[in-house]
Image (cartoon, rainbow, N blue to C red; front, side, top):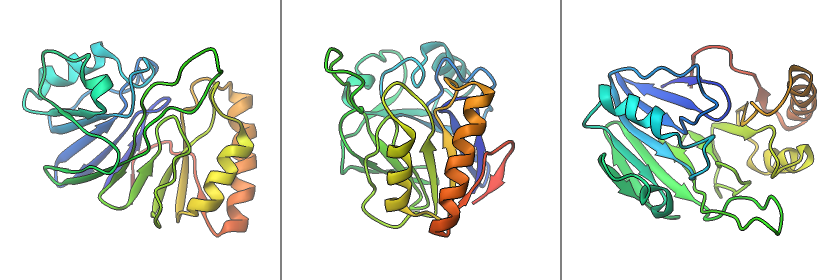
Length: 209
């Protein structure tokens, strides 16, 4: 599978000319939809993960694609083909097997009630927790590791990485960080990953996983 990371929390996975898109939000302006997209996964309803304009652009080129997410975010989508899922559900779309985990966005502050959030495991290889540190409960090859946001701190991400202990980890959810901030978390994550036997890499282009 070919993995491509875009700004902030968006990434794509491509297999045999079929593409899966995850969290095409409003900060992911470098993502331009191809015409081979079979599914879009939305981990939750926040605008940096769910952007109606991005979805419309995707669906314009891929009218048969299905948008997959928790019922709370799917309820906001009235026009396109959708599929609601909950934690524990498994779904196959085209060449992609999807399994979902967790239920709630990490707490930002007690004054702001958390929204629903689902982590997703793609083809039993790539795990992404959305805006949470929900564990997959199994060994995974590749981990999309949250690197910045109002709901997390670096130590929590490192603890999460230590438990999951993937072969490869790459940073995500980092548009909120300056270049200095990205360099700082990369240094922390890379140094800690070495002690775990994990490769940590900031993805600047497509890679095979």
